[in-house]
Image 1 (tube, helix red, strand yellow):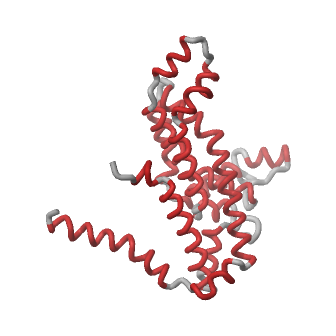
Image 2 (cartoon, helix red, strand yellow):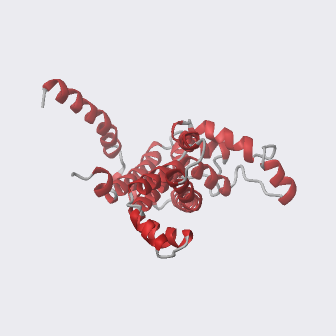
Image 3 (cartoon, helix red, strand yellow):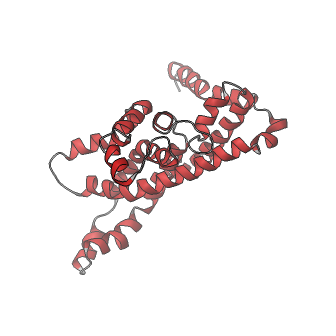
Length: 256
């Protein structure tokens, strides 16, 4: 490998790995079990897992049909729709939270109607956390499922159609099994993104312990008062991230 490439590559690797090493080096290992068992940590972790799981289920219900639409349907403006779907990937999360407030807030486009008709208020609630996480995480699922659909052999679907299977039967019995690995990978990535969401959550749902304070928000709050607690919470999120990458290594980072 040329030195002109090896040196920048090594520096890039050090730049990415060194902060993680610093986190592990500063972790209070001797008091780690006690800090992990603290009520605030367990509450934030439970809320994070629950909200991320619900957000992922919402993304599955809406994202898989959307991915199928983008991959298989032909309609005017499909490229624009695909661009709109991927906007949350590049949109600052805080901006996403403001956008959610303008739509689902008490004076928002839909929130005002929900409040006056059903008495439902979404901002600064656990449901608001789920919506914020789903907003930023759904593109990960849609992109993964759309890629799987484009890579699937459509001849199986055509064969099912010639044998008399309806569209819904073909989709559930043929298409979904074909793209199951892509759906699984997209689901895991979606869940991981939802678990680590911060900006949209704190803007749209706030930071109320036991109701809207997820793990990233707890890290932010702990930084102001207890650095070691923030390190422990960060270690939990790092462990989850590494576990997810290890589970997806054959699909995303495995050697050919």
